[in-house]
Length: 106
Image (cartoon, rainbow, N blue to C red; front, side, top):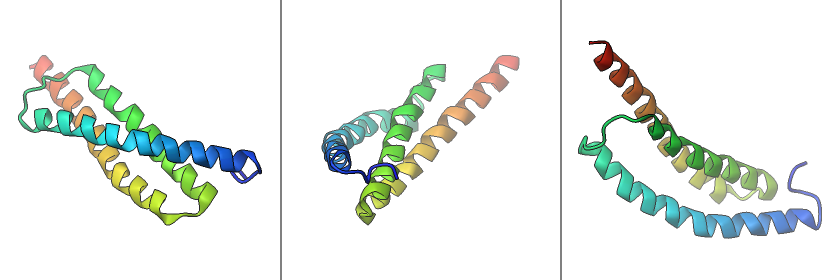
């Protein structure tokens, strides 16, 4: 079982908690700067939109593993909220790309 061996399980869990304490405010700050631009349609499509998906997906996966290792429901609760944001990012990048291709084809 990943994350349940001693002493590494405790060290890994502690590292995960520290990372989340640092990472979640960074995600919130980045989202507060990013999404207003999206809703104002002031960002033209660029393939780099997909770069928004990777870090958030990593955080969601990490929160899921922290829940598996600790059994604490709080991690899966935060992970579910961020999963919805991840799905929104994915749809935004995918449908923005589709719209861009349609406009280029005329």
